Length: 509
Image (cartoon, rainbow, N blue to C red; front, side, top):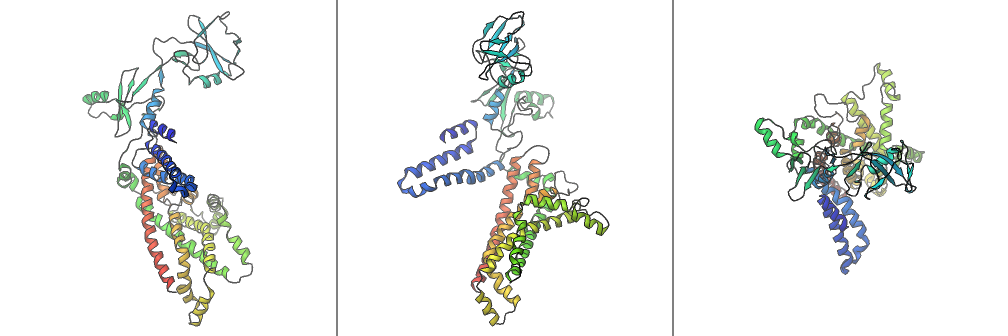
């Protein structure tokens, strides 16, 4: 564990290094302190909870304060090591042609030949061994190695192209030649700079954006053109394809982007209202339907066990499959329900293009998926209410409706109240139903970001972070996740106070 912490520190992944060090310290303290003997039995659980539960939460907060995303996936140290792997071929370098060889152990070697016809046997980092070729042709076998066919040359390239060959480890193999390649970029850890040995340019870390850039060249260009862009002087390598970016802290920039950027905040009001509507209506409808069926099945209805079993089917089907089936059935041209409605109305029902119909369809599907859960919960809660309380209510002259309002609901809410809160939280982030049915569509017109009328906050955050066509933006996604967490936490606290009032009512029943 400590060795892994050291490796993470060396890679600049400080947060994970701290977590591994904390876990190591915690495990050792628990096992070495006699007073903590009872905790030894749960030490693995504590370690896993720290690594798999606490760390992801803290890491999400950390990522929301960084520029972590495509182009900035690695730390500065990792980027520097990647850049240092790049090689170039000097103008005066002497190249070699090559023929590949392999032995019974699956090892590869090559015979290289320079422009003067001198040939050498090359195996890994061993010294070059002169080879005499007959009539300029490479032998079929040499020192236990067999010459490969042209089709097998690709395997030789895959095996040796990433290695530094020769005694000086300066030879590199490509599909056509073997040549003395030279390391192009050199990272200076103390100065935190990268030097291009081909051009002599020096790149320094630009910590506000997370790029290495040629500040001297930028200042020279700025003197000639005041509108010169700094991004034109970022270090760009073949390895990265674009600027060699790394992760840096950006403070609350991601939160500011979410609230202040017109492109992001434009459809936010519509999505915010629909998110609350979707969660509230889903909880209310599934609870009402589940409670109604539970009340009906509580009576001595013939075949109620069969009905109860059949009504649980939607709960047993994975939501991803269930929503996909409903999507197909509601298709206005090919679906069973969609075609029936189209025949009745005389025109195709625009389920996927009309915002209102799309939202109603999603609420209906979520009702179908969610009512079995509350049916089971309410059935158990109703069965736990003592029957003598209803008998006493009847003696006092209470009618069925009064018994339901003043007796059943208060007692029921004691058991179901917390589950209603959990269901609201679940539906507030119910990404599967929203994305599977219509991928958040139909689109909201006039928005520069991908946003739809059925998008909720979590699906909108997903599309902002990963569906804009500009690559992944984990920093922004984490910031939105933090905002959603605060909203859900606030709502949950309010709902808990409301649930506590139901508990106080039930105590007086």
